[in-house]
Length: 333
Ligand SMILES: C[S@@+](CC[C@H](N)C(=O)[O-])C[C@H]1O[C@@H](n2cnc3c(N)ncnc32)[C@H](O)[C@@H]1O
Image 1 (cartoon, rainbow, N blue to C red):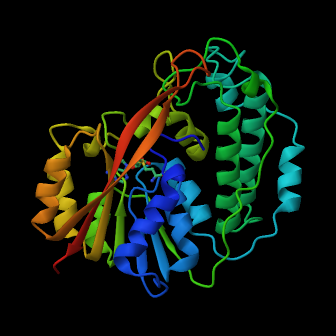
Image 2: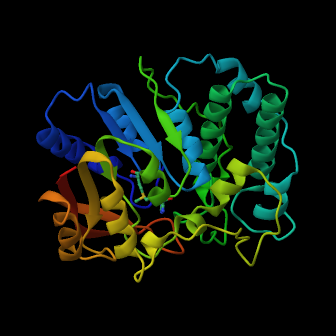
């Protein structure tokens, strides 16, 4: 998924850096990805640690992580996927509120894909209610739907706005692609809580932190993924059909430092790693000052080309050079 702040492209830098501090054999350690987003960081560590604890406050992210991290035993889902892919479209909440030819003509999806999303989403829920699918299977199917719908969304990148005309990739028919996960011997834990609340109830060895670094709230930028994941009914607000959303203190200039320090203070982990970049609400010095109070601090950096989507077109992505920091703390417990 094309996700704000995704660490997909930084995966090998992160893994190499973390292993160089903690040691190369981490098979007995518990790794926590507290701001998990797409789950890509936890997914990279899942096969090589004793347990991953994954968390994100947004429900669509919980769904992805409940599948990619929480699922560890093989599932046979080909028949269910084929059934869903062959369903006749249905006019439901997504079609009516977020599609071409819907009540408000909000062009987030083509009419056909909107009807398809409704039909698939309803069927998945019906299987869950009638207990024809287990929880593991339910989240596998939902994660597959979220990612497959995102591929045909008619946006420049996020759901803060839709494009005026249905772009080429959004004209393609939605095809449910399996959200395949790694099978592991060990089991893992997935939460959907505020980081600062959860941190008081968990412990482990390696804590990886990748909070938002600027004022862009994930709940508003990905509201439609939450709506597909929750499939609840509400009154969509304004031109973009926004729902009520969670406002993270990590996106607020006047709250971020207090929240961050409280998090570091309460962390019951030996090693803490924080990803942040040079455009963040906290400066490098501010982060360093806070972390230093709680143990041995060091810093690794890497240059990184970030691509910004143009607001109105889906081309002309602008590349900007940013510095990605990995702040490291060996905590005195
Ligand atoms: C930079 S993104 C993480 C990206 C992730 N590492 C990846 O590669 O996909 C930050 C994430 O923090 C989540 N978030 C924001 N505030 C939070 C909070 N207070 N507690 C838990 N998660 C939070 C957002 O929903 C978002 O998914």
